[in-house]
Image 1 (tube, helix red, strand yellow):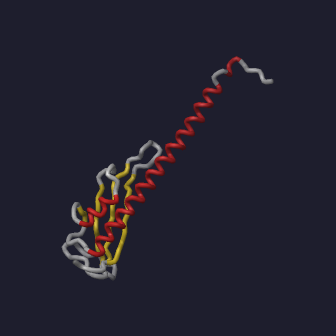
Image 2 (cartoon, rainbow, N blue to C red):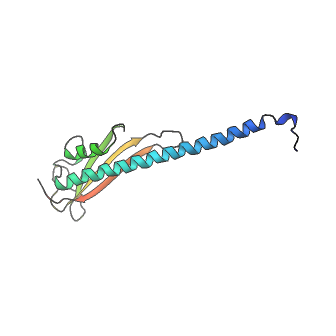
Image 3 (cartoon, rainbow, N blue to C red):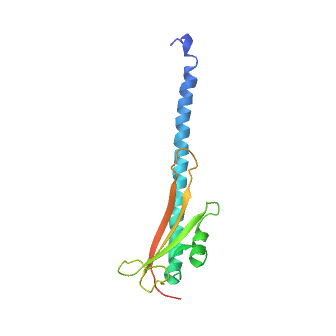
Length: 143
């Protein structure tokens, strides 16, 4: 049988607090990483849906989209509680050269849609970064 020394009465409480802190830290890190993966997946899905719309009906203006069918397709895939996000569209011809704004994508050109937003971590464990997803499709028809 072990005898307790007079100064050992608070050691268990201190060790318990260290263990609880580490467990809480690991739990919060797991939650933050899970939220980041979810948002990354959501951005990719929104870009895929918007690119599907863009391959059938390419926009007349390239760059940032704030309205129209491509923007609306991205909105339908993004949770309403996310911060401000941006949708941008670029187009490249079959040789890979970017098409400038003012020219429209033609059949066979590659249209790329990128959806992104700034992510603030839920806890101090996560990293602040920009979540983005992009998708490239070939234009199949013009309206």
